[in-house]
Amino acid sequence: MPHKSFDPTTFRDKPVSFVRRSGRMTPSQVRAWDEHRAKYVLDIPHGAAATSVADGVTGDPEQIFGRRAPLVVEIGSGQGHAILHAAETRRDTDFLAIEVFRAGLARTMIRAELAALDNLRLAEVNAPELLEKYLPEGSVDEIWVFFPDPWKKERHKKRRLVSADFARIAHRALRPGGVLRLATDWEDYAEQMRDVLDAAPGFERDFAGEWSDRFDGRVLTAFEQKGAEKGREIRDLAYRRA
Image 1 (tube, rainbow, N blue to C red):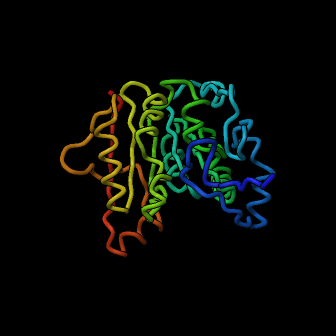
Image 2 (tube, rainbow, N blue to C red):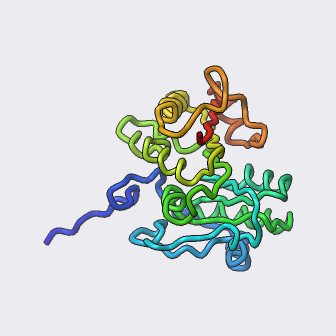
């Protein structure tokens, strides 16, 4: 019987928006992971794939954070620059960073410990599954998607995170009046995001004109600066759950 090859970019019948790279962590990152993951990283049992969420597994934000507070979820938090800044300056709000690259999570932990953050948790899972299966419906105040992988080649665009299915999942997770914030430096992806969300049931624009103003809660990162220096326009969008 021939061996069936495994495509690491898919989960079951849905493509995922990332390829999980096995980057080596520094000794300080390994130490941070070992010492602090129990405090920061949600213990979410996995299903068929390494970053999947097992069926029937759910989490209650009030139990996770030990209080009732607004909840912001960032998808693809990278090294944590945006969410760390927000968690430090908005202590009355809880933040959940979703990232599949462990080195980025470890670096986020290091800075979280230095800032003594109690309002930040991390999840090493596929973000749409966490929003659809793990979190209660209507439990999130804001979802952030800043500079997701644009999957530039035409044959790869099906892997882009923002799709009609993602809009459905985000709508489920957001409370009424909650906001989905997006940013990208890739023009055709920005246009796709806007087309998808303009057509998505239950969402309305939270901006006037062609694009949203830059979200002032997003710190300027080296990644964004590099894109701007290359002449790419930074496009922001914001949609509110009606």
